Image 1: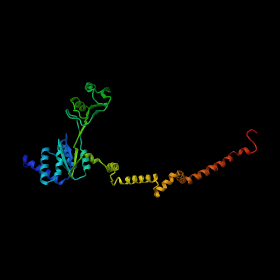
Image 2: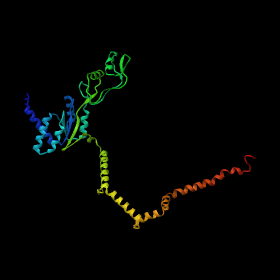
Image 3: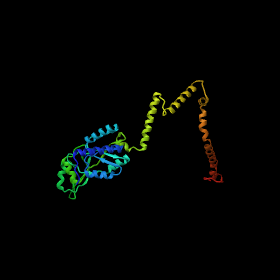
Image 4: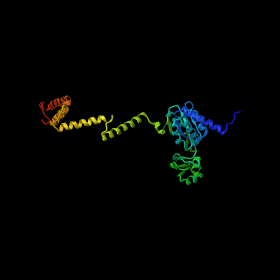
Amino acid sequence: MAIKQSKTEKKVAYDSKLCQLLDEYSQILIVAADNVGSNQLQNIRKGLRGDSIVLMGKNTMMKRSIRIHSEKTGNNAFLNLLPLLQGNVGLIFTKGDLKEVSEEVAKYKVGAPARVGLVAPIDVIVPPGNTGLDPSQTSFFQVLNIPTKINKGTVEIITPVELIKKGEKVGSSEAALLAKLGIRPFSYGLIVQSVYDEGSVFNPEVLDLTEDDLMEKFATGVSMVTSLALAISYPTLAAAPHMFINAYKNVLAIAVGTEYSYPHADEVKEYLKDPSKFAAAAVAPTDSGVAPATTAVKEEEKEEPAEESDDDMGFSLFD
């Protein structure tokens, strides 16, 4: 027969396990566990078995163990976990890919009925259609201002109805109606709130970023740095090409406006003195393509009289 552990022994065992996991794992998902049942939590543990461990416990006990372990090891990065341990939360220690683990956790959501007093996490909309209820239930719908009609001996909802808004508490009438209709509007599971990775804490939305998103954000950052460097005339690697081009434009403008010159400026001055050279340069590449077209037009003009040679056959239309 197994010997039952005392509360003190349980606390010591829990502290030892948490400290061991902190030393062994460098990646932790902090998850909210509101309305998650024991069977559902057991299924999640089975699904993550192999490279992840789910640890639940009282926040005060976890904070105390983390604080003491941080002092013993001298690793102050563990202290970043303390502000995250608020509410009904748990820790998932993992060595796998953080995104894959969070997606695996999201799979284990279970539908739940709307119980009286619960705060709705989403908007609850009752769809139109036949309810299967007998006509004696119409008064129940009237209390909730739901438009109905009798169709083939049953109550039918005419239009979609927003029964509960997100953030509102579920009332007794709403809960009773949803139960009658067999609607389980809510789903609960472990929700990733924060991610801890080797001392850094960030939002789980970061896990959804792709390489294209990172490149886009990096390019935006480079463009902002370049704009700032150009505005304050501070040379940077990104701004240097633009600075050289702008400097060359200024030198060229001075050469054009004065008698000072150099080979490249001479070419520009020639074009400015004789603008017809611009037209010649633009027409020159197209000469080979224009000539055949002009020749073809002339040939067509020569062939046109041949079509009218009927008048020379010795008679006319009015003879």
